[in-house]
Image (cartoon, rainbow, N blue to C red; front, side, top):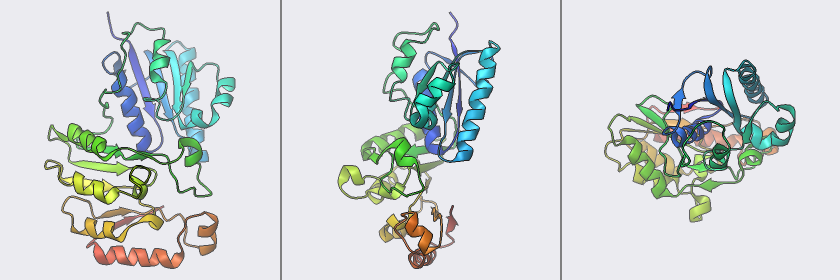
Length: 297
C-alpha cells in the first residue's frame, strides 16, 4: 500500500522552521513528504502572526491551499502555529474548509490526537516524542532552538501573548541534539535561536546560562561554526562578548535588535536600555571583537 503524502509550508521565523521540522520528523516514517501541495493527502501550513504583514501573508497562503482543496487537489488541510494560537476561534468560524487547527509547538501539543482522526490510511503508531527533526535547511547549516516564549514584555510585542513566557530547554538536551545533527560531519554551522537568547536558562537555573551553554557547545569537536541570534541589548553580559571574542568557533557576528534609539520611545517600548547605554555597548563590542559584524532591526 502506498504511503499517504504530506506537504508542509513553513512561514515566519527560524523558530517556526524548527517547529515545522519537528512536525515532519514525526510524520516522515508514515507519510511521503512532498515539496508541492497538489495531489497530497494532507497539507499543513505553519503560520506567523507577529506583525500585520505576516498575518496577511499567512491568510493569503491559507486561501491558496483552500482553493486547491476545493479543486480536489488536497484531501485534508491543517493550519498550525502562531495564527491559530492567537485567533483560533475566529479562524474556526471563518474558515470551515480547514480540517484542523493547532497552536504553536504543534509537534508537541496535539499533533498525535489530530493524526488519530485523519481519514487516510496511516499506521496507528504514527509518531513518537523521540522522532528526529526532518531538516528543511541545506545539510551544511541548521537552527537550534534554545527556548520558547519570552519574559521581556516589550510593550509593542505580541510574542508573550502568542508563545507565552520563557521556557528554556535543558542544556544536555540541546547538546545531544547538536551532536545528533552533526555526527555525519556535513553540518558546518549551527544557529542558536530563541525569542531572546541572552535570557536562555534563567527559568531553569535561576540566572541566564547562555555563556555556560556556549562553553559546552564549543567542546563539540566536529562542529566548526556557531552563530548566535537575537541578543537583546539590555540583557547582554560583557563576559559573553569577551568569550565570543576569544572563541575560534563562534562567529564574530552580533545580532542586536535595537528597535529604536530615542530614549522616549525606548522607554515606552519597555526596552530597559537608553541611547547612551546602546552606544556604550556597541563601542564595547567593537573594541572587544575584531572585525565584528553587527546586525540590527
